[in-house]
Image (tube, one colour):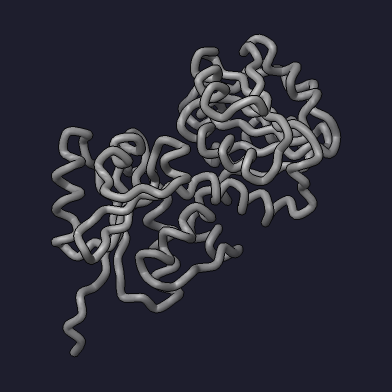
Length: 277
């Protein structure tokens, strides 16, 4: 009988019961034949530091971090990747054998991989992107769009000062548009992204006028409950190329799983089905 420790990983947030990550990672562990477990953990902000110190002693090799702890997790880490520093938040922690906590952010990677898989003809360099929202998800997405060569990003947020903060950090390729004019920026964009929770089940609807959407524009929504938001439904009617938000969740998990368990999983139809169960 093997006496090797069974590797453990999980996701920390509050609340956390809604997370699809346990289904996703559980599917990969099972199909790849890895004797490990992935556990959801509801942890209060005041307890996060103590929990992160304790988990490696219990056999955890790392954790995902979700709302509302992404910024705090970055502060608590010993080592931080450049992209996590740029984004200002961590969604993945690796517990190293030397006792140090290594923080990364794979949200932007997941976002771009989702588009590359589901809209293979998308050319990010072909024109401006319009981004709705300026929160934590927007930071990761803006950084990734700039990295793949989007020439200009138009950002609109209900609170303009948050959009201006992104402009000051990410530079001259960012242009801020008032929320009341958000619909107008869709006319110029070849890529449209909703990074807000508007349109999600249990949240207010996205009320931005969508009649400016043009045929052939790539439209994506990071919301995946429902899979087809009003934005995606209207975009389909306008002849746009649409990509739902579930793939971002699936792809952002790939590098984390590989770091923790030593095998790189594949995002395929079975992976998607497992997350939707």
